[in-house]
Every structure is written in structure tokens, then in C-alpha cells.
Amino acid sequence: MRTIGRLWRDAVVAAGRSNPAYLVEGPEGWSETGWEEAGQAVDELANGLLAIGVRKGDALGILAQTTLEWALFDFALALVGAVGAAIYANSSPKDCRYVLEHSDAVGVLVEDEEQRAKIADLGLPHVLSFDDLADLRAKGREYAAQNPGALADAEAAVGEEDLFTFIYTSGTTGAPKACMIRHRNYYEMATTVDRVEGFAVSDDVMLLYLPLAHNFGRLMHLLGAHIGYTIAFCPDPLRIAEALPAVRPTLLPSVPRLYEKVHTGVLAQFEQVHGLRRRLLEWALKVGREASALRQQGRELPRGLALRHRLADRLVFAKVKKRLGGRLRLGVSGGAPLAAEIARFFHALDILIVEGWGLTECTTAASVNRPNRFRFGTVGPALPGFEVRTDEDGELLIRSETVFAGYYKDEQATREVLGEDGWLRSGDLGAIDEDGFIRITDRKKDILVTAGGKNVAPQNLENALKTAPLVSQALVVGDRRPYVAALITLDPAVAEGLSPGQVQEGVERIVAEVNADRSRFEQIKRFTILPRDFSAEEGEVTPTLKLKRRACADHFADEIERLYAS
Image (tube, rainbow, N blue to C red):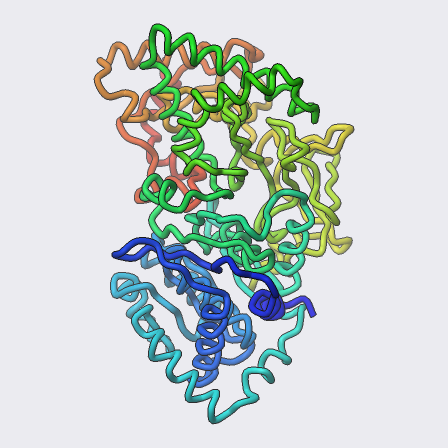
């Protein structure tokens, strides 16, 4: 039976798992939680849920950061057949209430009193905080003693077609929609990724900071139980730099923003190097690029190059690797496009970042580059068991066992993306080459059509702009306008100490370089530098740091109008 409860049971009883299941940071450093200890906690929580009257089909929200409590409660819900309705920890009270009301939730687990305050006026029957979990576990032990077969009966009643979770889309346009994800969807997703050779192995240590309310973070949490690797939870994304050297992960899933920030920092350091050290750096990068080119072709390094590469690693690359913990085996990027130039840069430093692609509606991923078969600038070949093809207009379509059951309470929206033949419309435009590698060109709904009738993909230009250390974010505009323009924000660490004139000249140079190999109609004709970055607090980026294009354009409407003034 392909249920998440089955996945968890198999994880707990798997032989030979001597590594810890989880790592959690506390006042005295990082502590381990073993598989047996985690299994006992989940059983007690599940029995506790039964004790307070939670049953199969009941929806319960989880409003918290990426923590051990979140993960264990998620498995407990799965065992009793309840449906998790995950909420981003930084959601506004309005958004929290929307998820809980829309999902018909009977309760919610909140991290603390601050989160509880967001939903205090809803009057839900079951509102638990992390501080209440010890009492819930105690109720579970008592309930299990009095009803020894109740949990097993509850588990047996859960089928693979039953709903496991609601995952709410980020809402880049309009209200979020609730994707109905069945047990078999996520079970298949985990087993499919397990079939990707070298992606994740049981002795990996993963640093997980991604929100568990997002499909990417949720898959990494479930995959950990399926494969048996150790997950180190980092609830605060702002503390990743502190967690990396402490955890020393071998596997790091991330949205592109983290890699963009590291890229900016490394380039800034390189700019400070002069003299003999500069020549050493340039030599090492040349060696790294030669090795990268061969590895991209799947070829072994010649003996001489291999020796030079080991020396370059010891003298230069190791210092950069240390920023990521020192033993990173694989970086994974998803959730938004990663600029090919950044991936190539890291690979020249002997750090491989593989990019994947998918969407919540197919339960996370549809394709990914393999550790032993990758092409930068693509999102890799389709995953095992997945069918991916392009429609007449270039939209990518997906068919697999992981395709969702539809949008909750929205049959019309479901019909718009999911045909009776099982093909899911991704909303992404792309192409598939003769070797099966998929290249995403843009979001179908984001394509700009200039006043001259030319189609322009804004994300390509935005990614190119963001490869420059000085640029933090970029929003390209121009729909139904005479030309393409851009709103640009600055990285404060790089801009610090520069005069306004130097900043202006620097951005002009960056824009000119981006325009250099573009057709005239897609060149950025004008730009403006915004006084602040786009932010989640202002509702301008999603929790996974994608720009909410409409919100950004609304908030900076005056600046956009000035770009098109005579």
C-alpha cells in the first residue's frame, strides 16, 4: 500500500540505520534524534490525536517553521488519515485564516504564542502549540494502553487514494489554490527520486531550511525517511551561514537565492585578491573550467589535469567549499530558475549544483539533472516514470503517478490544468532536446508582448542581471509597452561605499552586458534603481523568494510610469 504511513513504518523498522534520523540545534549545540526515538514520538502523537477525537479525513493546519516537531506531527497525521494543511510561518493572519477556513480545518498546530495569536479568533476545536505536544503524547500513551488496537485500525483504514495533504500554491497571482495531494502521490514521488542514481544516499546529511509548507521542502522531509539520510533542521533561513559549518551537510536543497548570495560573496572576495595570489586564483579557475568541461561531457580527467585539479582544490577550491560546510557532495536547486552562469561558476570550483523543475500540481518535481549526467542551463531529463512533452504553443505537459487530485473546491481551475487524459498543463514554456534535457524559457503567463508584438521572456533577462554581484533582484517589464525596461535593486553589501554615480555606472555596465547578445526588441532600453529590495513583508516575494510580479508592479507603479515617460 503506497501510503505515507507505510513509508514511515518502513523507515522506522529498516535494518542497519545506525545514523540519526534528525539533528536539532539547541542551547548546547546540535543533538541527535534516532529512528527508534522518532518512531515512538510519532506513535504517541498519533494516539494522542485519536484520543482528542481527530479522525480520518479531518484537516489540521501546521503553522510553524522547519522543525522536528513539524516533521513528526506530519507523520502522525498520516498514520491516522488526517489531512495536513501546511501554512508558511511568515504568513499574515489573513493568509493563515484563509488556509484554515478554506481547508475546513478542525484544528491547528502552532509553533508558539505569536503564531497562535494569528488564528486566535477562529474558534477551532483543537489548537495546539509545541508546548502542548508533551501533553498530547501523554494522552497518546494513555489512549494506547486503553485501546491497544486503535492506531493499527486507523492506519489500515487509510488507502493510497486518500488525501495526505493540502499544499497551497504561493499565490503569485490571486488567492492561493489548495492542491489535493494523495498518499500515493508523495509515496511515488519519494520512490521515484530514490531511483535517480547518486541523488541521495542513506549516509547523507541534509541541511533543511526550506519551508515544509512548500512542496520542495516537504519532499526532502519525506525522502529522508524513505532513503534513511539524516536531516538537520534549520528553522531560520537567516542562520544558514552559522548552520553550514556546524552540520557540514553532504546534501543541500535550496532555492537559487542562497546560491546567488554565496556566488556574490565569493566574487567579492576574489576581487580583493591581487599579485601572486591573483595569479594563483586565475590558474585554479582555468584548471577548474577545463575539468568542468570534460565532466559535463561525462569524460574522465586526464592524469595531468587530475593532478592539477587536486592541487587547485587544496589551494583554492577548498576555501570556497568551506563556506558550504566543507564536505558538500551535491547542491540541489529548485523552486525558481538558477542562472546557468552561476552553476558553471560553482562547478569550476568543484561544487556541483543540479537544477530540477516541477510544480506542486505534480507533487514537486518532474525533471532533474543527474549527478553523472547534467547540462547547465537545463532542468535535466524527465524523472523515471514521467512523461513530459510540449504542446503546440511550447507549454510543457506532464503525466505521471504523482499528478495531483485537483484543486480543493475549484473544479473549474482543475479542468483548466488537468485533462481527462491525465496530462497536466505546467504553465511553463520550454523545449526538450534530442537527449531529453528540458530547457525552461519562461512562465506562459509571464511572457511580455511589447507594443510592437514581440514576445519577450522576462526571467531570462532577470536571471542574467542577477548574476552581477551588485544586483540583488530585478523585475523586467514591458507588456504592451514600446520597449523593455527593468526595476533593479542592489545588494547592500556590494553597494556599500559606492557613490551614487559609481552605482549608476555599474548598473549601466551590467545592463549593457546583458543587452550585448540580445535582439533589439528584447534589450532593456531603460532601468531604474529602487531604494529598497523586494520583500516578503511587503507581499512582493513568495516564501520561496519568487517575485510576485503583479504586487511588485503595483507597489512601484510610479517608477514604471517614469520609465516610459517622454
